[in-house]
Image (cartoon, rainbow, N blue to C red):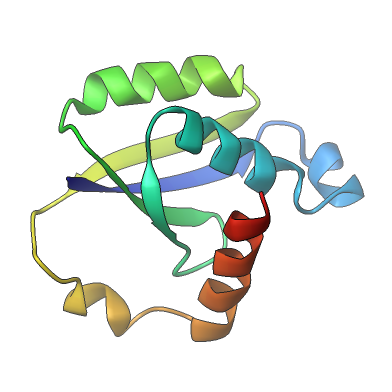
Length: 106
C-alpha cells in the first residue's frame, strides 16, 4: 500500500458555492472507484489516501479522466512509513473527523 497526497481546486467555483460537498463527494467517489482507501483530510482541499500501487502516472491519468477536468489537482506520492506521525502534528482534528464521517456516508 502506498500513500498519496491530493490537493485540488475547482475549475468552476460557482458549483462549489451552491453545494460545498459537490467536489468532495465527486473526488471521494472517483478515488474509491480507483481502489483508494484510508482517507484523511488534514486541511481543506487536501486529501491523503492509500492506494495499492505506486504507479503515480497511471493513477493521475485515471483520476483526471474520472474527474472530467472539473478540478485542478496535484497528486504526489508520500514516502513509505508504517505510521504517519509527521502528518498527525498538522491535522485539524475537527476537519478530519468531519471528513471521516463524510467519506463513510458517501
